[in-house]
Length: 167
Image 1 (cartoon, one colour):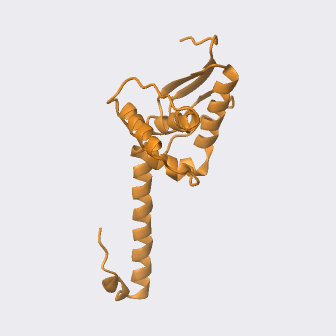
Image 2 (tube, rainbow, N blue to C red):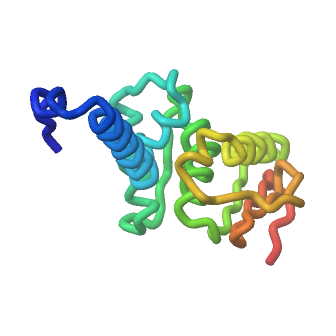
Image 3 (tube, helix red, strand yellow):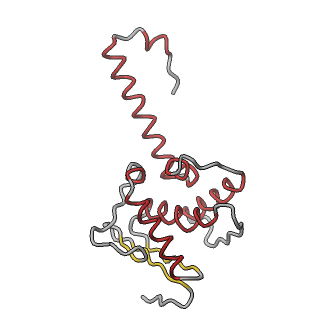
């Protein structure tokens, strides 16, 4: 939307003020919608200090395709390039934000690491920044970092190699 600033300046002060409030609110809504539909936009909104690289754009596009069902399997090999933060913390939170009934199993080489990722995702979902983007809420009685549920029926379960996954 193009705005003619000269026309805006000619509006009465109270109308101009109301217009600017609505215009800013529209910008925030567009930013929120972009964060809901695009993984990298979500990352930038949740993590303002994040410094984007080309490899981040590539993995984010793959995550978008994974979320849309365009691809079914994905292997990510990129040591020391934000892989764990993206794939093990931010992606589960973003996916469950978009699909609050989603059931996620997070597995890693140790149960402790899986629980740590679960704690970070859970903390993110509880944050005000996340709540400004998604309506997904955690169940009040979900206290465990490695096993929690959304109020909408989604679940997150963390396990390490050799850990029991049933159901």
